[in-house]
Image (cartoon, rainbow, N blue to C red; front, side, top):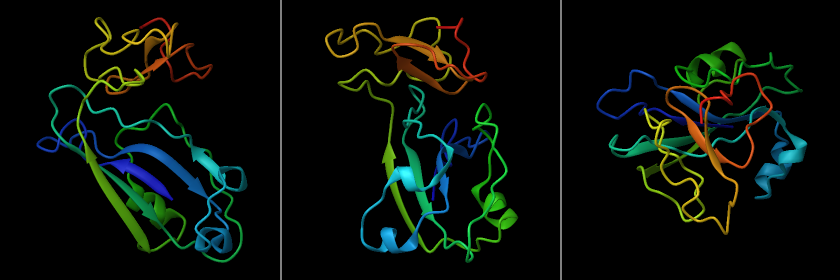
Length: 169
């Protein structure tokens, strides 16, 4: 199961597409068919990253795709989650023999400060982050951290991962 943004940095110029926002494998089809999903029972290849279209980039499509996995457990190669931009879900599916998606869903969203201050705006806004600390009661110590030129996130602490620029808030 994957969630990607094919409209990065914008639908008019998808030169950074696709952005990988979530990727899991080895989902038990019996559990999935029952309508339940337990994130503890899958292999999480890319942790969920909130949609965060840059300010002024218009609407972005966020596509969720489900693939039927061949019988048995797949031993996925680790992904470099510091590089979520310019990824291809079709290439990934081909690499592991997943075929075409068996289900999909899409939603659109555009830049907007959320009530919970989780979006910083992306783009070139590291110098003047948008949303962080606008609601100090919810995230009193939130700061905007840069993962790459496209992706920023308001968090209380910088993730302890190589791909986050903890000095560029």
